[in-house]
Image (cartoon, rainbow, N blue to C red; front, side, top):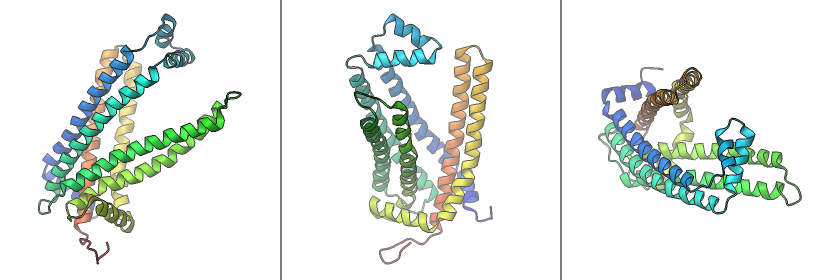
Length: 297
């Protein structure tokens, strides 16, 4: 990395103003706490509504994967279970999405004001872009669900059910959907930087960001790659530690506490690297001329 490296500038910006990292971690963990509470409540409501027979309960508590899968299938075949599941899923997902949109909009506007104090922050555009990220996630899930339905229609008939082919076709769509979702999510996460540079609409910022990422993909790709390596290393260390703890500790409570602490430490480190990456992106954007209708990026 050179002296004017965006990564070096990103670390310098966060070290100079530690409140940036604190704000990033605060809004992410606020959403995480609310989402976890909603998830636990939804799980409790769903499980309390199930009617487990004595045989199903013994099979689920056993160690035979085949018996566990058979018991779960038997439970899910009960009348009204799927309706209850999707109802609770909506009751958990919709409030979680709303909380994430609010927290992400406030948090991103606050961090951008510290990154670019002399630039106005278009909060309305950030709100639109954040909402679009949620919409992209919902569209990806819906697309895979529709694809699974099509695969079931093609491979499962009343006379014959080809489950291996169904699973193969279902999994084939995951990489495609994942790549499209990843690209759109990355563009939408980068676009708020332009919200602090110009006062155009969210759609125009999205288009400008696509052109910006295409014309300067080397700079953005370098930042993402270099900062992605320590995050991947931290993830591997956390997974190895979790496996060691599960194998060495007999107490489920102690293992749960240890894994929770390591998970939170990893999340804090990952959030720190993310805000450094955003600061590096902001450095790249700061060095570019502001585009106008007559001046393409």
